[in-house]
Image 1 (cartoon, one colour):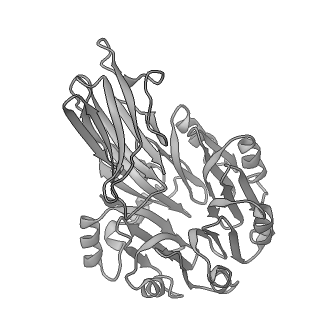
Image 2: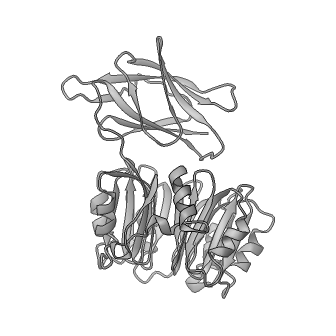
Image 3: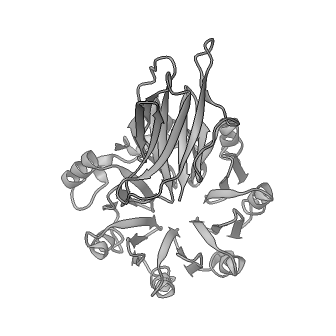
Length: 417
């Protein structure tokens, strides 16, 4: 997997520029490890590999690159956020690290708030920082423009927060029951509009721009509100219509959305080719992570698996939630003497269902053997169309295991621990 980028005019950043120390080191890391998270600041970029290695590059005026690398010191990183000129990182024991411009105490303030607490999620923008503790407490520090600090903390009081996002003038959070919280500037109804769209829905993720906001519901429906002068709201909604969305990212005036099959959607201001350039770069590829900032876009891609399947074959992927970077899990399919499996890497594997219409399904923790969730799945096959499906009524999936049917006989299985 690589960070797929071209020139700045194409709205993307070359992967060779992403790195810990030197371009050569970066290239070696990217060849041997998968990037799982990226975050963009005003001139600097952060990324985390599957093994927890922090990569950082770009403007270092306030030590936001060299300082965060030094603070991490080779320890495993679980989350990052690039503010305008500061950087946040969470290491595997939940300790928050922060380095960079501290004009409004967006660094010292969030470190003080997080002292002695285990942090699970972070977000940052130019002048403020957000963090979430393991027990769902929302922390905020920095410039309190239109309530981006105080009001979001007040909105989250007594609630268990799981996800946060920050933009130049807004703070956003999602609670464990899927309630969306928002505070900050609302001149384009980017907050009241998204809150109205999300009312009564279970929200899973959110992203904010300068004057527009995107959110995704539990069903994969994209929500959008705010300024729309470049189609960053209406056009991204149109592109996402009928697709299951699993992620969003927002620049100043452009929007990115990721469909479950790995297809990237983009709309909005294209003055630097941040829309058309990134769409061209990802054509025919599977996007696994993305970020947007100002007028550029960055994505992580892998080549799509071979779509040629024999009759009754399927592509199946498997993942564990919450993600366990140290774990090793697999989903096993057993029918008679036939045994097949797919590991929780997010990659698709080819499974043969020809002789497995009634199949035992097992979720197995490879590193820690013990009691395992088991169940059955019944595959169906349409001789006319060649479509393999799952009979939901006849299937009895293991507790915690769900699936989504994608295009071209693809199934994405998820097990919630």
